[in-house]
View (cartoon, rainbow, N blue to C red):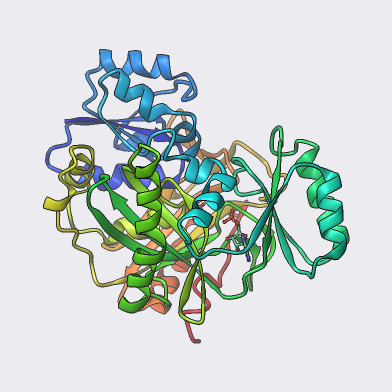
Length: 421
Ligand code: AMP
Ligand code: GLY
């Protein structure tokens, strides 16, 4: 079987590595992929925003299944386009992808189906927000409605923070803003719960916790993710039942009520307060770096899972997982998430020992004449599975040190809440 993966990050490299284990895989194409995927797949440098060009390549190369990694093409309707052109595709359609594409869509769904979430208001202009932020208690959270690559969320501790946030959003920092969202600040512990669904059957796809802030101790600017661990320390059967009953089931029903169904991975971002789950956000894809952290634990053939999802036979699949804990550290370019140098040579990648249960996924890398260069802020993702998180972290740090790349940096405290030293 020939499979195509859309995306170029660590998430897509880890999907590529997992798929490659399936005996039914004949060839993998990555659109456009990275240096890591080039060892297992054919990297195809097409513009992934040009669906027509993608379609022509897919049909002329007879690709049997397409998998969409990032949110942007999903929100832009790539699944609807592929299905209309008889291309088998794994991922949610355009209407369902609004769960990530519009925070206001999701909040209104929460309100209608009584899904627990932060209290919120929708504001149409600066005049409306000014009146509110003068009176309210702080902290509050101000959010741009649409996709903002994880950057459209402001935690505001006072009136001047709130004034800056509303100004930046309404001035178009994240695209034209017809309105914005102001939420109550929820104080608890975050957790990410993943599901896979074919629209009929829902199965849990593990839990994780990521570290979004750039500095140790969870301080500093927000990033795309500095590391993650799986499982979350918070999950237990009782909490899981609440997440499914109070949050996931009503969401899937809400989508059915507007005439659509959800097919694909769904990332449920939660705040857990006194053993009660509150929805913070949905992402209509796997997380990055959570995907790299979770997939190495999967024992079941990933290709069969994704095909079952497309064919609506997910009820026939039994997901099996390794018992080990998994921890991932992201090696970044110095300067990230602000300015950083691009096209920096990374030597010694071949010297990293490839032990069982240890992985090095590529994220922002490119290959030129057999040399590998860092081309993005988040460069490599080191993952280790072990009996405990402390041992996993030690092994990951050893691997990063054995690379000795002096243009990079990483957080040494990933998993600090689950590791007692
Ligand atoms: P989002 O993009 O909506 O996930 O927001 C990014 C991050 O902002 C989340 O992972 C939380 O850490 C934080 N956040 C978002 N909404 C809230 C909220 N209502 N209360 C507290 N923290 C929040
Ligand atoms: N790790 C956060 C995300 O994928 O959105």
